[in-house]
Image (cartoon, rainbow, N blue to C red; front, top):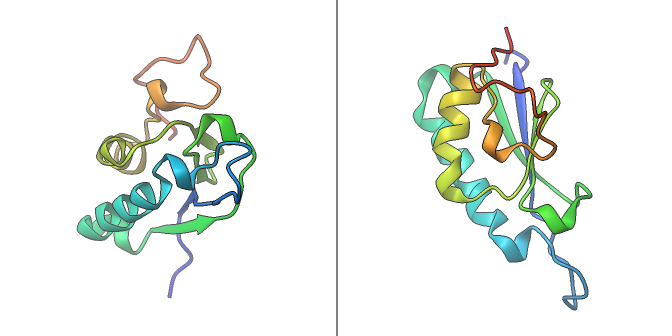
Length: 115
């Protein structure tokens, strides 16, 4: 099996006790399921993109958090409804989705191409 070109990490950390927010309580299980489904529907992506659920990625107050490697692009506040846009724009067209970036660059153009 060939090595995947990209790895999508979706935080599914569930914090006990509710002392701080966590990605799981904000819908990350649905985000993860949406990524798995969306990538599987794209024959050209299924063999090139690996989707993995993870433990805590750190910025709990901004979750659900998603990271795309090797691009090093962090998304925050992702919902299941955002997943088709991330898949189409970032994973297919190589353009990160500015409105979902965790730390957006004010100079980032929506036509940014990672190639």
